[in-house]
Amino acid sequence: TATTTPHVLFSADLISPQVQAALPDGYVLRALRRTDFASGFLECLRVLTTVGDVDEAGFEEQYDAMARQGGYYIVAIEDMSRQENSVVATGALIVERKLYVLLAPRTATPLPLQLPPNHRGIEQSLANLERIHSLGAVGHIEDIAVAKDQQGKKLGLRLIQALDFIAENVGCYKSILDCSETNEGFYVKCGFRKAGLQMAHYYEGSSKTKSS
Image (cartoon, rainbow, N blue to C red):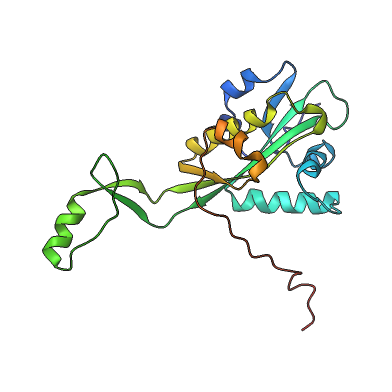
């Protein structure tokens, strides 16, 4: 009987062989699958946040929407020795495409750009610029979660390295993430630095539940 390949969210070509080699024996780095509802994936996320009442049909519907839209790269680390809840760590990269060209002065130290008011001066200023990122993309790293009984095995570091590999190989010029002050030191060790301030606007309910 022919075996079927499980539906995966993205190509195995984007799985870093270096990260796979650095995992503990018996652990596998892979893309999220449509069949991962009962694999331990949601249990990992519960370490990080409130998951809520997600049923299998809802999980598959959301997975299908991500697969159709593209730009979603969710990785899982699986402990192949486990019979249940084999997914023990997960993280996500969401790619945002930019509709502009980023320019910077041709200097060793980038300076704020101030264009002169006359046309000739503007042309000269533009000639002294170089394209850093032309219609590029930014990676947003989200939902880094490791099962409680798996912490201390550097799986969080491997997730970040795996997502960095994907981001670079799909054309991102940088990756950004939000974290608590408690986790800031971990992400600094992963090569990130503090940049800006997070703002959030939460929406209560949805249009589906509001009366007309």
